[in-house]
Length: 186
Image 1 (cartoon, rainbow, N blue to C red):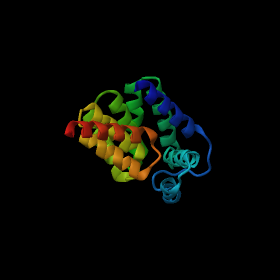
Image 2: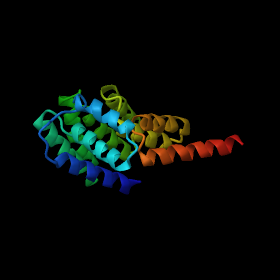
Image 3: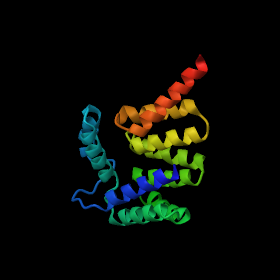
Image 4: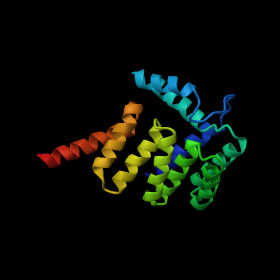
């Protein structure tokens, strides 16, 4: 799973470094339309494009300094320098506490460090700021699975899928948990 998270973090860094004239965050009004498209489409390629557009907005805070801290924190996280990445993400949540992705990135580092309680706390803050954050919900699913709480994991996966029905990994995890629960009930 560590390799998957590194690849995901590298992809997110690449998205963050791409250009774009609209700097926003979870308050960008374009998100409503994107989330509607994400739910409505049955085309996997369109879903990936819409997801990419959502991440691109989430990863573009309105503050250039915060954007720089985000890129540096993600680079440190990708390199396995978790203490350094935490410093960058701590700066973000300290200076821009209403920026959901700062909390989400810090939650990811706490997860990678095995500090599930602090990760859950930051995910809760992320979701308070952006209730549609399917990435945070997926992270919550991973945490609950790691903690052995299959019921809570399933709820997290289902919440993520209600927002983003094309999350293949979340769908697979939810189906596996349901099969296991069904097998235990028989």
